[in-house]
Image (tube, rainbow, N blue to C red):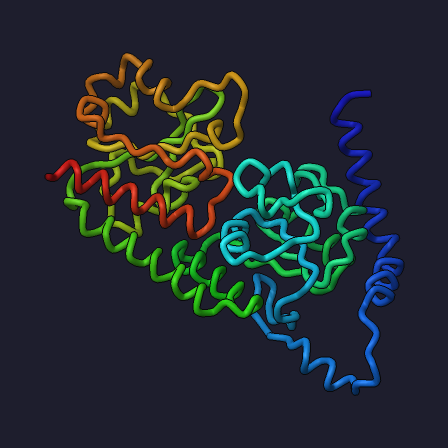
Length: 336
């Protein structure tokens, strides 16, 4: 049977199971709740605590310091890892190479990847909070059917990128009683941005690139994945300034077009480095092997910033803090 048919069949089955087992899920969750010892319901609620947050869908009341958390949104993984938050289920293939502590052992159930999530594992984990969104956003309704306390706090399209990253970590701080830690994370992010702005001379032209599958693609200012948000945030001067057609994977562009733009700087996201694609050609090799690029100032002066290999898997506020820090160091080094 073709793989596409198998995937479709399994996905349909998973969705049916997610909807059909809703009642069972609710019973399981209720049955596994700790028994009260004569305490009034009001006292139990006060002891556990709740907080009302505003996620991507509106206001929702969620537990503070929930005991059984499922984390699906990779942009939250570093924050949860830094704060020592344990999860009961997660997309383990997406996280084990970067967050082995969060992925845990056999006690953490594997939800699988977003292309074909295992909703039975979500039910089995009996969560009292699901952090969905980003790669898993197509399954929001399925997850919400399993556990109404499902939130999406990933950065929203069309909103200012840096504010969205701050908002996300601040909401997590409310949920996990880590507001001071969230403020520290935001402060480090702001400092990295300020340093990058200060180090940039305001005139050098910059092009953002994304490499994958042996190809070099264009990352549009403000829109291109990872790289794009640096342009409006730092005030970079684009060497090429055209809107994105494929913000996620980058737009087709010839090396001759890049050469003609003659950028002083290149900032490059290597997608294959993040996914560990076997036999993939590294971004640095692609650029070094492109004859048309060898007379470009960015190549001649070695003014190329490569994003951390884990960036594509992460994409959270800490990943961007690291990127702005690297850019600041590169700009400062060039001017010294």
